[in-house]
Length: 467
Ligand code: BG6
Image (cartoon, rainbow, N blue to C red; front, side, top):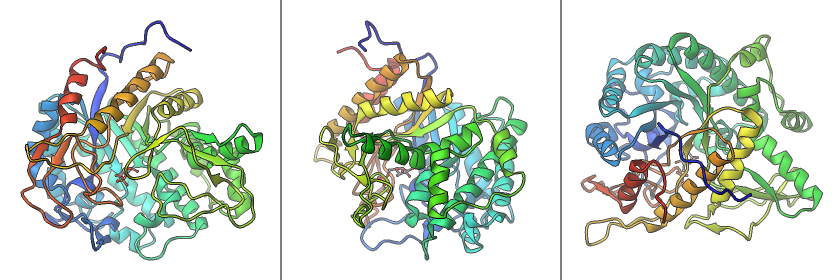
């Protein structure tokens, strides 16, 4: 449908940017912080999370840059292990203080803090006691949530419970040092996370006045390779298992029927204790955080032992599943330097599908381009490819708004360069460059990329200017 005129981005739109604690902060065991599962990840050739972008020591400088870019919101995560080093034991006052200072600094510039409570960095001590397979982790999360709401709830109104729960279940390697759990165990972890997030949602509404809380899964439309109806069924199935399972439980308070049948068929159904589904049904999110990078295309499974095609994959690269779906190629789309598809229209499709199913306001909590940015001799970082990528996605966001989707903000990944989950500093996302290499920490200088100045203009104009 062609529009005579697109709707404008709403007033007060939360133009922002995102990061997560373990990928940006560094100071991994400073000021009483406990270790998380991520701190065990020490790759040989690329950066680990020990120093990262040293945001812990550059916090004020970084927030000043956010203000200079004009950011209206900053989505960051709190490291559970700074607040409760063991996950559920003593409170660490210095950790509390760090986030108090960060939040105060943001508020002083009029930047809305959007807090993710848990972004992949489970406290190691909890992991050693069974992690999310254990119901004790639910209690620990509730204890942690209470501390966060009590301490920061006067200034933080936007909360995200769990980042990309679906990625943690479908790509468990990076979150589970040591043995990778079986699928059956993963779906139990998944259920326990649902209960924990529901309890936190209920608590937030009780403890934070005007508090808004929601999940932040990685959602993407799944396309059938051909109009062959069998491919359409495979796409529907995978979309339910990969995406709707997570939002149906969080928003509708019930398991998605296709995903449930899949779990039954495979023997993955979790143990659901008495009262769990009542708690889940009672918890009503106020908005949905959407991490969107790219769509995926699938075809019908052959069930002949070749459906799963393992390759060097990450959270966006599908490998297929025997008897469920096969990964297919989408010849209409370009790829990034890292093999991720670029599909801005797919973001519009995804937003429309989510809104149609759940009718809740949405905040884009991640979307962006990972690239091999270079600091050039003129002392600048020229990233026209990132500007182009974001321009196309912002345009599609505006089309989605014109379609009736309630979009309240857009926080690209990432505000500043940080450690990519698989490629360290070889893959950068930020509007701000950090002068360090994989192993050589150099001077950690913050350098504004071309995209920084471009985004500053977008925010100033509350949207893309007519060209
Ligand atoms: C999301 C995660 O899956 O993708 C982020 O929430 C991550 O933590 C981002 O950094 C980009 O992925 P990657 O692997 O390129 O760092």
